[in-house]
Image 1 (cartoon, helix red, strand yellow):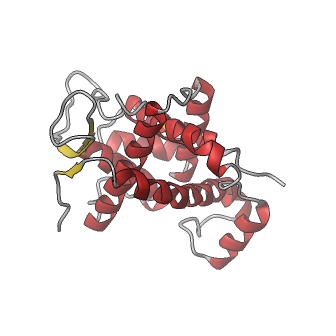
Image 2: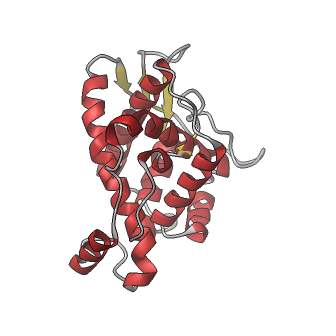
Length: 227
């Protein structure tokens, strides 16, 4: 039976919490209009405060749609709000991992998690198309990966096995039709669906930690996503 690797490999797509939100534009001549979406660890940018950009939220939201994402289509406000909360949660855990000096993820961990994110987004080609549509670069996707890898290192000791997804679960969910890969056969969708289910399991685990960490950390939300 094929399974998703341990939690540590699943959060390997964002750079460390200190640089995850400062990726450069894709070229010297192309810049997106951006702004600060949230601050974690303080009420104003500064030392020890993590900055989450609006562009970070849009990138992660677009990737989360998987094959349903449409180039140039507006993202739903509810999706953006949910995505921002997810990034805040990941940032809180990454900060805690840094505080307790969890070893940094390896390059292999980051590369593997990046691959899993691309799979859940519908494949490498589709991920590249989304990056192009958002005027985002590979560095920004890598930033997402490394942050998650840092979080995974923190979660591993407590949540080992949480994100293992066996063939039986994949096949059950595929048969239910409650997934975004209905236009693919089971074998075509198997690994992308496995990655999606692992991500959902990880989200649930993250939520439990976030509740604890948010209660003792200053978080300032600076945007409201409305229609």
